[in-house]
Length: 150
Image 1 (tube, helix red, strand yellow):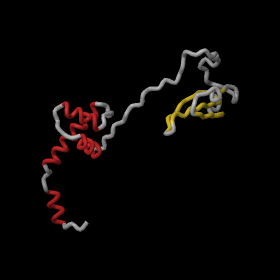
Image 2 (tube, one colour):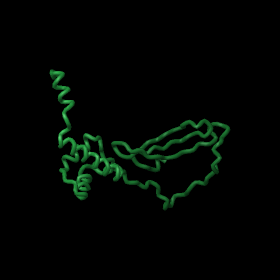
Image 3 (cartoon, helix red, strand yellow):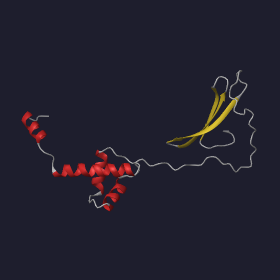
Image 4 (cartoon, helix red, strand yellow):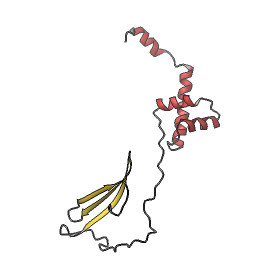
């Protein structure tokens, strides 16, 4: 780095600047607000909250300090209802009555559908399990829940 040893130690002993001390205090307040709001506030909202509490700073400074403090807002996804209970389709009777112990393979199969979020959208996965071996008999995937998938 081509820095003399004495220059390094002089720099290391130098007291923190007033701006650095103020930034550290501001970062503590930003972290407090960030945690108080369940880590969902980004720099614009944190900036507004700071201004409302009487702490003057710019939104860019808040964004920079949040980056340095590794604070990134995580937005909660809205709950999506995928089950329609008001339908006119027949419902199959419950033949198992929660008796999931089976002594022979291929005697009882069970199935379920789940959904997985991907970068391309929702992916619906249907699977069939053999209750004796607990193994997967078959799977099917589609981007929509259709009659063919079920």
